[in-house]
Length: 357
Image 1 (tube, helix red, strand yellow):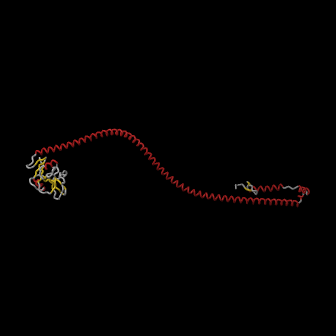
Image 2 (cartoon, helix red, strand yellow):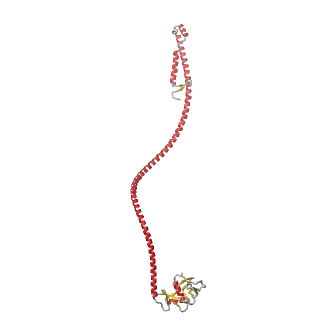
Image 3 (tube, one colour):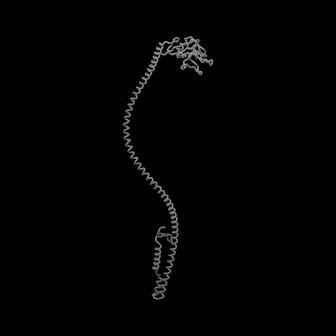
């Protein structure tokens, strides 16, 4: 209900307060009393009873009547006033009660809202404090980052300047490199050509050196042979190439023949070539040569590698453990296939002694 607005007994709203209404009702009662006038009948009576008021009893009666009228009007006015006031107070009480209930509900809602807002304020304050702390930390971090950024900017500027200088140097060096690369390519081509020529000349030189070495060796061998061919052998010794050969006149074992050869400064013959094999076979005797078997291996007496051989067909046959010596047999038709192993029984033997200048 708005302030200064009230409902009357008829349900209409009045805009005036109660004090003003009471004052108007008293004024109305007073106006009614002033408006009271005697009727014509009363005028007749008045005309009949002229000067009644001059009597003391009449005056008293009139005063008493007026007083009764006034009392009656007052009672009536008071009754009306109190009836209206009671009804109005009851209505106002109901309205006030309804307003109180509404205000109570609004107060409860406002209290709830206040509590919620208080809790939200607490959360907001907590968040605000956290955010303030984070803001301070971020401000510190920002300041540090700003300092670092400034330092990095300074370093960046220096590096940019150095980069520009390096770029200039790089461009100059790139140009020089390209020139050098061109020169290098030309030199590489010339070097490859020279290397090819050098390889060819080296190959030719090696071939010439090999030929020269072979010719030198042959020359030395020929000179040795010439010198040795001029040297005579002792009596009963046969000369062939650069060696002297002795054929025993008696027969003995290969071991005894080896010992005999050594006493004369030689060894049982070691055959090193086809020509020497044919020469020894030409003595027309079955003779021991300087081959023996040790640990099931054939070898020459002077440790010459046992590579070229002239065995007869089917030889060596190793018929028994005593077959430890080798002879040149005259039963062979081919002088290059005339070796035969057998027991070291007495036979003739051949000694070989190189010619020394």
